[in-house]
Length: 279
Length: 223
Image 1 (cartoon, rainbow over the protein chains, first blue to last red):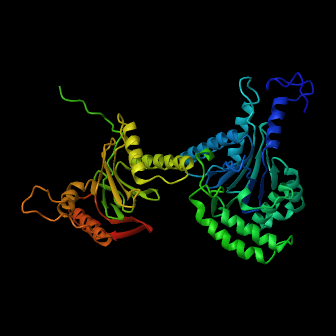
Image 2 (cartoon, helix red, strand yellow; image 1 turned 180 degrees about the vertical axis):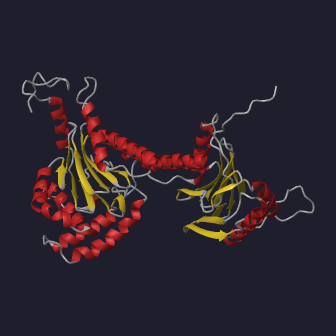
């Protein structure tokens, strides 16, 4: 994008009817490392690429548990993402307290979108520089939403955001029609494949990616590194065939190991202890 | 000039008794299941015990509407704690939180008499006992509620260590096993039920140990 005289303030329109600051905020999302989400009728899977700044530092936390039935993956300014996650958690807790029932995902994303919109119409604020993939379950089933810095939100069957997300989107576009009926294991497999697409040739290992699942009867939780590595190993051996016989077996035991992680929201993707900066 | 009495009180007493006993590696928390108002019974099967965290259980007698409100608040605060610290609250931490929460309403208190039971950071049983405005103390055993005046002296007799000043020197209290503690609790309630009209129907016993949480029930006199 080129600099011009209408991009200094978020409250300045361009002659073409654009708000450049908002568009620049969306650029920030595109620069962040990839995050993908996909859903079936009963489950939603979120995945993201974890790139550490250097070998010495820990990974950025990009997937957050918001409530038992909602989780979010972010791309862009992770600090903004962390703050918005805290807001979402607070909204869920307050709603549960008042109504003794879980906050419907659709309501939460609208509140989030309205919060983002405010920042596009105040001269003393700036838009949030983070895109959020909100995965959740409610009475109507499984949902995946994408919240933009602009204040827009859309519901998706599958989506990818962040750098090199186009590769993942192409992969997902080819297969999304089957996702509704996918099993939980196939959904996770597709998520890992989509993440692999964004790595463009780099080997997919559990140390550089994070996967989280939420489903009917399964609270939102992040899969631990071991489980993810087992799943990666099972489908890479099996090749690119659809639903290989090998994958469901090892994935099933991996899946049941993951169920036990319901209480702790962090499956410690960094493995060797989560550094304080991750919170 | 006689003192003016209000026409309406925001409080009511729903009766009931709670007990907790701490052991070397377990904690027993118990409460009856009768909920009353005045001389009437509101419910014969109402639980006064709630699990606040993996290692922490609270039993409360008094005004159950305030108890419910207090339980909801603590549960919400626990969720926030888990999001911030990535782990469950320990029993001592919850103990302090409960005290602060009660004192926060020092000038319109929660009419709630609580005992907190659980395992401390070393895995030993711990019991905290409270008054309505948050004064608390860690103890080996405690009871609260309408039957506490009947139960507490009995627990003192069975569990309190003898004074070191006594001559001839007496043994310190032998540590109770989990089964003995549960049995003691059942005895306490069976006796309290005889003489306290607000304690009756069923006894709910929750045992917390390293294997997790275990719940059992015992029938009490229903009159």
